[in-house]
Image (cartoon, rainbow, N blue to C red; front, side, top):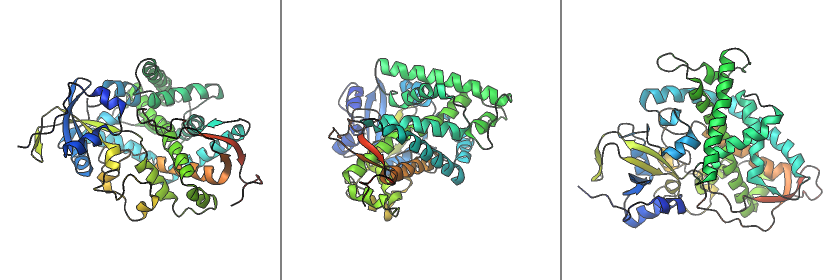
Length: 423
């Protein structure tokens, strides 16, 4: 049996937090292996990277999700009792609920609503000297997804609910007061949506046909029972929160448009030929979520390395998306690569790997790509703006990672009427 490489430290949590996106891949290359042992949060952990490791990680006979995610992440980003922590038939049954919400027509409707909200937001941007794009995207995304999901949102509570949704992903992995605010935001949002679930079930509010609120409120588990209101609230947040988090990808799309202005010119002219490839390359090239966790279901050996039962494992998403065994020149931003290759189910995994209906791959990927396309068209063809001098380097220690400046734009004007809009 080959001994699995061991990180030579008592606990590597600090090293992981300093460089969460590159920590695993860097050490795998150093060890010359796709897996190594370490300790994270004082718990023995196996870290894995690469397409072969991803295929192994998503083998349900080898790994399970229940109890795998570190408590700080579960208590903020994911919530307790949601689909991410389920296994086997229970997971597939709950997952089907989310897949049913993501029909082509429904996804297009969400994209159209987001486009409308962006247009409204841009009228306010024109009167301001500078816009921090990442921050400015949160409210239009919140308004769009709540309307689409059938979640009533009074004008007086838009800012509060936006802050809560953002805190759950933007501060989940932070330390100190920001993390505590993330936990508090999770509790308050779950109470808010639990009340809506009860109101929907009691007929006190109308739920549009096919809406996320209506479908989740009506969902029955494998025993034919409705989900407890708090669990239903967690699942409704699993629709709202990730949609608002697409602000990360859109910010990076704006970053890429700035660094590759020839693409922006092409999209401004209405040439969408490379738009899908551009969006996918943003998702591959830029950091989003660094890793996902599971537990070894039963002891096994892989490539001569022992995986003991119950051991937590973490799969490197970002490093796998930049693995040279899958991608040529992986550290170069080249949208054209997606004209010839897609990385496969385990080589391109920004939102999880495998098959959506079976594995723990995010069913919201069509939503992510649609919202990104809407945003790219908007930033390229609907408005004109300047990008002032700023720190556009990536803050790698931040979760989620962003440009240090969070992408500042200024002098926003409407493309259709601006005399400087010359193609």
